[in-house]
Length: 330
Ligand code: PHE
Image (cartoon, rainbow, N blue to C red):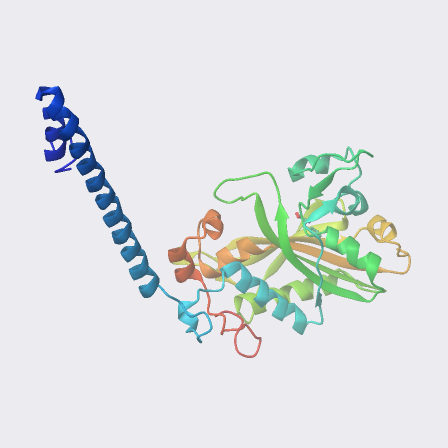
């Protein structure tokens, strides 16, 4: 600035060229210009040096040796959704369930048709499905709208007796404080020769007690409808919100927890099993909501903001693995 700026010394010097005689200009011109060039190269060299020094200083102070053992507290936290998934897997493993998986990009047949939701069925409209473009045969893949297609895949792949839970991501075109376009469900499926609704009730009550770590719960089945279960019900659990704090098990209010029912004979048949021989139950439950209820978060969207402060507050240590004996919640 002081040399090359608008009123800098070199700039001023160059301006005097106009007042000089042609002879003088001939000798002073190259001199002044050479001076200007030298100064600007010196300045830019100095700038490069300073920048390199700053970079080297940062490289020296921010160096991380990733091979060194790290403290758990320094390497992040287990997300509440992962934590709850681990808790659920532990609870159901103790009841003799395997964990099954299915693809998130699913065929229309697995997500709908095999689950007794044929094309043009009004239940399809309720699912707000994300579809992929159709292939040349007119088939459209989709992002699964629930974990129920894993029921279908499991029945096609395994022989009864079947006892699985399938946790995972599901997608619906919906977004507000209680809905995100991607969320998590856990599906349960039991298929055997004489499984009945009483087994379903016991299984769900046992799961609720273990998950909320209470000795007793009062539950009720509310009649509902799902095309893939008959009869269908929603499970409510008695609770209280006294003092703004949720207590599960007793109280004046009811908490809607999940949808369930006896697997529809048409679904069993679509999966290659004989509905006269086999029957069973299924349930589907929102994991994010379970996590919010148990650990007291109020806005679902925060789950997916990747805000470190939120994660540090609500996250779990990866060393605290949930076990039934050591405690399911951290
Ligand atoms: N798939 C259902 C839903 O997403 C839940 C469900 C699963 C209901 C299994 C009954 C049996 O809403």
